[in-house]
Image (cartoon, rainbow, N blue to C red; front, side):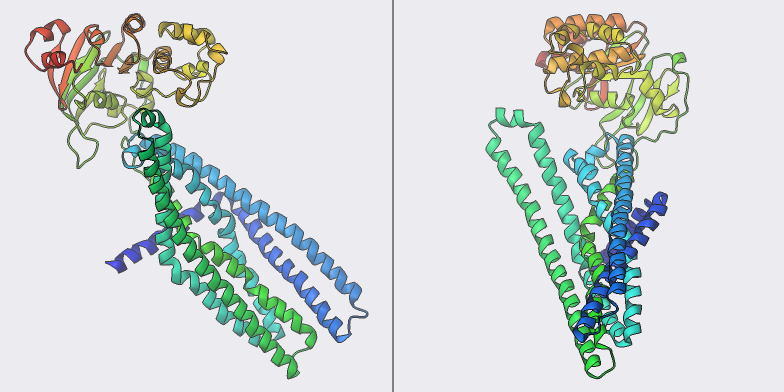
Length: 586
């Protein structure tokens, strides 16, 4: 079982290397330039050191006279080359890295758009934020400090080994032995590095999620006097994250110490061999400092790459989390065709619809059938968990029905494009989200090309114009993140204005007036009714006044439609609706 797990981990590692490397393909010209510059930088650094060492050797033998000018010129050229190549390597490698990271973020946003909101069933918002930000940022190590550096670590030492071999073959033999040991160290510790890397990234995601939840739910924490308990919960998650980081750091330090130790021992061995050769007259003393210097530098690029490889556990764990989002299978596949939405009759029909959020879970809807005709307002009522919001989510095609058919007009939702569905529907859901932008632009999202006067007219219909004009900058006031500067009722009215401005033939209101007082609710309902003539409106509501205003009431219980009719019909009919009214569950 353990061997099978190790084999799977190794396959994932190799898979990550290849799929990350493929992202560099569009920038292969710059990567080639970065590699050439990296080799040039390493060789020019060696050149500077070697010339200085040779000068020192000649000086100790008193043979420097007559060669100073030539060697000084050579040293100056090597220094200039090092400066140039270092700049080019850093510029090109990081330019590619940051462009690839930008590509990843764009791809992640597109991927999340395709799989939302289903992805949040299996991933907390903090974990998702961690994937979008810190995990992608961590991939910079691979693109800027790993991919090109590996090629440099192959080319530069190979050239230096040839130079040492020219001086005397024994030096190359010694270096190759220690080179094998240095490469073996990260390979030996990679299993532990991978496991620790996954643990660190998972604990980071959990820690971020708990912190974000605490910030978002701070009002609830304070109102429930839960501050101390939640703070301890946060501290526990941070402690787990710290413990995983500490274990990762200990392994990182051990691996680094071994690498540095092997490099140091290799220098001692080469130095000893060089001293013996000089003593035996097999090598000119002037080359002795050069050999010592080269022996210390030949393994430098390899040790540097191995140092980066020590972080491969984190890098590949981050890559796994990123690709988990990128490769997530959309719950809804957009295979429908584009139609002329203006010709669609905006009736809504549920025909024997079955649905559950997870395959192993219970059905949220069971054989649901009902129809709402154009111009009608239908209220979906039922206790919490009856399936009301699920009906709305399916109509917006956030998910697809498992069995049965859902239609707008004569079209099955699965047969028309998602873009068409978005054009046919407009929704105000329970959780109103306002973007960190002006009130005007938040409303204009419903119709980006709308003129300012259209925006204001929609706000007036939603009874939002008056309070907007009382704000410091009117319609140009920034709403704040999630609309936190506004009350719940104000946010709802802006969301209603946004939906009314969109002017879609099917309007969905899921608890859209729950934060409004009775007077404002009546006015907005009347405004919605006037603006939605000929359109189909579906409402999820618990307020009796909202329910009574509907043309049709669909009563749901445990995911099933148990009654359908007008308020007058249902209040006289024995059944679940009467129970809801009596228990004030609506």
